[in-house]
Image (tube, rainbow, N blue to C red; front, side, top):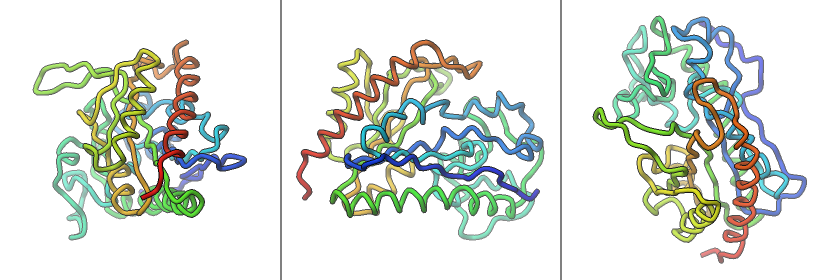
Length: 288
């Protein structure tokens, strides 16, 4: 099935004056679901949206007003996931054999969460029939690669301007996760710095301190240590540090209905303060 995108895949909200050495990325908050995609799915729209980082871009919406750009995907992760390597695909999803350059085995693929996901976060199969590799290639060209081209350009501009950048990759997570049949309740926030390899420890430590000052519980790297964006950009581009932040959805939304609660404005204001404080920390750190 040919994919025709009627909405631009990437949106960058620029500050009037870029004064903060930060870039905010929201790769999973896209909420535009192409009609052809919904039609070919075995799921209804509400079920498809369970993988969406609902309103995360709005939670960090103060970033441009505080001097830092925010980049967001307009298309959902169920359609194409920018926070994965470009060719990480489950071969059981496709009519034909996949090319040799495609990764067909990984823990993410086993979980159904490759670059083109097989399941939504609730574990339900997305598709009612197999896909063609041509369709995958179209989605990558139209959605995936433009996101990374735009993000790379932002980071390079930031490096030229400040000599360093902290990339904050913004996500939300279900309240609990199932591990081996047991339910584990997660902290309010999980910070992923690839176990200290993606950013200076003082950044993640300070980020945790700020969030705890609001009364939230914070943990590190488990079960979310940082995905492809956090790992790739912190290891590939000199001067770029990266920190993934996962927000517990119970703090601002009803997940079953995808609706914001009256706690959302409070959290949004607190995250504005978080942005101000972490920006000051990064600004004060000397470049090595």
